[in-house]
Length: 182
Image (cartoon, rainbow, N blue to C red; front, side, top):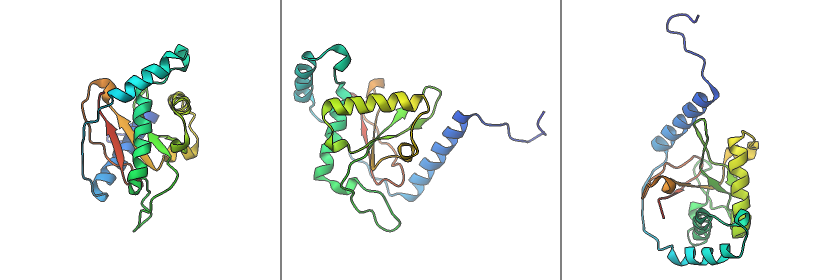
């Protein structure tokens, strides 16, 4: 038995939660945060998505979340400064959008692997990429470059009824997008 006061060994899930907590605490301490919010009318996009999905088999249909991911990627064309990594004193915009997607793991913890070159993917390609990332993340089979993350991250708690959220920036990224329920 361990000596009194000795730390119990941590499970991989506990180590992950501790690392996430440390990164988020560092982010709040070192990165200036400000929060903005807006409501977006997604009815027209959802109507087009329903028409698109009506022509496909159930297995090939695109989830509404993909519309939100594509919207975030498209918005970076208007505000490219948000697609950047802080490299010391500067954070130059990055042309390629590697869209990190927050994925909750079944045993606890969170990862945000990127959909590489997301701005060049169609709805179907984005859906396929997301499905692949979720499966591999939950199986513990992400690559080292995926674990390091993207150039910006998107997270959502809309499927849990949350109307809006204000996530913490994942360093060295300079911005994060949070979506609430549709």
